[in-house]
Each structure stands twice: as C-alpha cells, then as structure tokens.
Amino acid sequence: MDLEVLSRLDGQVLDRSSDIYQRLLKERIVFLGTQVDDTVANLICAQLLLLESEDPDRDVFLYINSPGGSVTAGMAIYDTMQYVQSDVATICMGLGASMGQFLLCAGAPGKRYSLPHARILMHQPSAQMEGVAADIAIHAEQIIYTKRVMAERIALHTGQTVEQIETDFDRDRWFTAQEAKDYGMIDQVIERSRQVATA
Image (cartoon, rainbow, N blue to C red; front, side):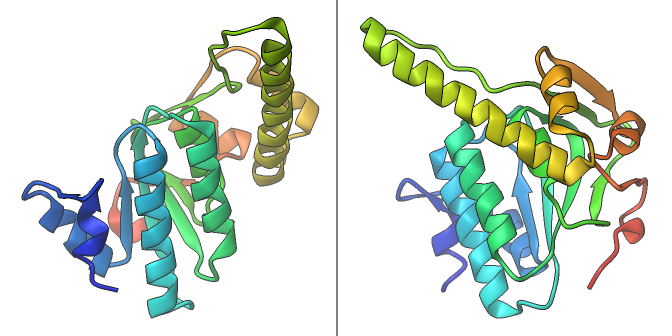
C-alpha cells in the first residue's frame, strides 16, 4: 500500500506537513495529535495494519497528544492495537485526556511512556441525549455498558480493580506523569528518546 494513500483524509491530500507524517510512518511512528474521530481512527488503524504487514515482529510507536474524543472511534484504535502482532508502544506528550488516556494505558506492557510534563486525564464516557423517553433509555443503557467496558479495560492495563477505576473516573481525575506511573497507566517517565525500548 502506498504511504501517500494514508496521508489523505476524506479524499483530500493533507498540507505539506503530511510529508512529516509519512517520514515518521517509515520509522514506524504513528502520531495522534488531535481529537479522536472516525476519520482519525480510520487513518491510525490503517497505519497500524500497514506497519504490521511490513514487519510484524518490530514495534510500532504511537505518540499521543490528544484531548480525547469519540468512544467508538477510540475503541476501533484500541481493538486494532490489540489485534496487530506488533507491540504498540505508547508515548504521551502534552496531553493524554479521556480517550487519549485510554489508548495510552493500552500500550504493550513495559512499553508505555510519558514525557515528564505531560498531563493525563481519566474520566467516564459521556454523551448528550435527546429524543423520546424510550430512545433516551436505550442511549443511557449504552452509556452504562460503555462505562463498564472502559473500566474493565483500564483495570486490565493498570492493575487496578474495576471498582477502583469506576470510583476514580466518576469525576475528572488528573495525573502528572509520575502519578500515572504510580497508578499503573504507564511504565516509565522518560526525558530522552533513547529511553524508549525498541524491538
């Protein structure tokens, strides 16, 4: 697959900075630097699948600076991270909030990192609902289901209990990089790229 195809969003070629992302992709670096939506998720999933097809035994490096976004789009990225044979190392820089936090902690065990001044936000999923009462009830059930699934996944990756996660993300919970490490979201706070394990 041509890398140029992966630098297109909604059929339009990105600006000249897309050359940077193509060069990073050749180094097995995927960059999430925006809100997570369907377009971004499709691009990142395609990049992960491409890199696995090129060499399933080499790591992929997912850099995260994201305020979060769509749960369904984020779950597509999450499932693809778990699906590919390549280890996906995660590195937080700047902000890893909401779905950004979720993806950060889902990196390969031992390969989840944060730069020292990154901020990480964990909270429960939310949604705006409108419509007739029956439809609102259906949406509410889905939100409760999604909340439980996310709590179970975060617990799996952090070593915390599901109950602890549900308590902690009931309201916005902010972490420094060191606090995220102590909580089990990441494995190491790093200051230099050479500190990232490569395979």
